[in-house]
Amino acid sequence: MASRTLHVFLTYFIALVWLANGLICKVLNLVNRHEQIVGRILGTEVARPFTILIGLSEIGMAVWIVSRIKTRLNALAQITIVATMNILEFFLVPDLLLWGRLNSFFALLFILIVYYNEFILNRHLYLHQKA
Image (tube, rainbow, N blue to C red; front, side, top):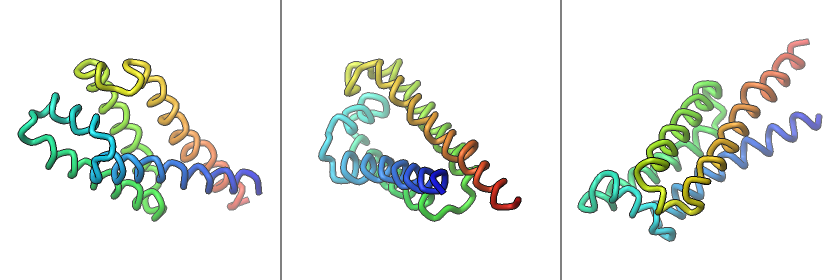
């Protein structure tokens, strides 16, 4: 039962990370560093609309996570998005990141949590449920 509780906790934690980054940081623009990052990469004239679109996409990711629809595809999408975003930021805008290039370490931790939750913990629960 502890595995199930951990899985549920991690699922909602992961969704909350996406929701907070999308809604608070990007859509509501309470952390304007995100818009600066988008502006530096895509251009300042499109920074706000693209930041909002990215934020809405992150909110959509949170909804998808909680929906539990196609969880493996979802986990792979999360891992790909976080890795791609952090590689781009590492090389293009390290000065705008909260922890500079160390952000990549936290991104890797998040990727490992997503991987563990879906491909280890969820698989373990699935196999024990079938037994």
